[in-house]
Length: 420
Image 1 (cartoon, helix red, strand yellow):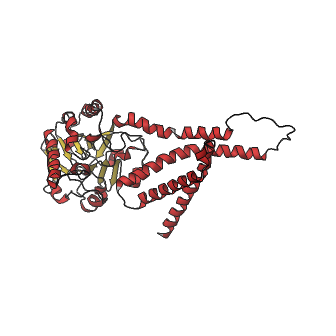
Image 2: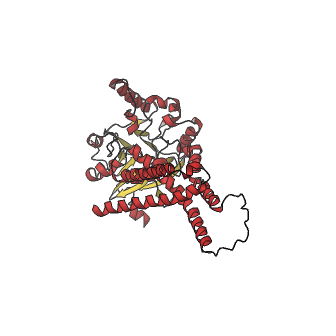
Image 3: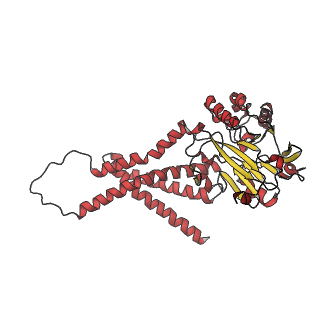
């Protein structure tokens, strides 16, 4: 523990020294501005740097509200990209200065009037700042383009106990619609049409239809009512669906809001599972579709989920597929206590709507909050899939982590055997 604390201190000091080094280059870019040379400006810069470093370290190692965590991590990593981009220009300018110092100075016989041009160092620093601003511009592009740039991700799930009647079954999953954030109905409809174009046999929705209030979905209910599948659409609730983040005139008003949301699911033709299960039957064979209400390990998120009624009556089913919004539920409860759950389908993280996601590599600041945050995870015979969401919340767009429509194909084989 002491060695880890020592490493954190060293890392923090290193980041602070790094910031101070870049400050010299930043000040040089604006050395003709009076504010750039003021002591108060440097003090303010240093205070901001220290606060951001401390906030980021606390966000990684201490359990604080997730919104605050996300804010610190997002700002830290965006600015770090800017700083790393700016760094080569500062280094280049220092090398230029060093070479200039080492060169022998010519003997001046008569004064020569200096040309009124921008000093080279100022030019380099401004060029570096402009280059470093590109990542910030990409966020603007994300606001304009990434929010509705839906992507279909195909994933095969190998289940050794899967009945043959379900071999090849296609499941569609969407999550985290957050209808209260939308501002483009045509684009939202386009995503739904993309999902339906995949012709899934069954569809899962894993929570957060709204941000806080049921009336947010009013203008989009007709669109999501189109989400249909031959074997049904099954849904569950996310942490935002309960109205816990809104101010209510009374407990009765909050309870009515939740009941209205449940009714909305039913009106759209979705079979909402509230700590309960259904039997999916094909050609006389059955598997279980289970839906647990929101259960989040982090203290801010409510624990409405109850697994005992969720699994009740499924003992004879060879495969059990669980819809549970928060992926932290998997490691906290499912893995240690419910080995009968074959696959859990989640959402919630949004991939923080910022990061990198390629075929063989993915990264987002959210990985410092959630161990499982995007894609497929395996532990023993149990699997978890985390969908990064259909909508967006807070930041009105996406950069790198694009809205997702997942299509699963079930295979009655063990993954290792299938690869062989």
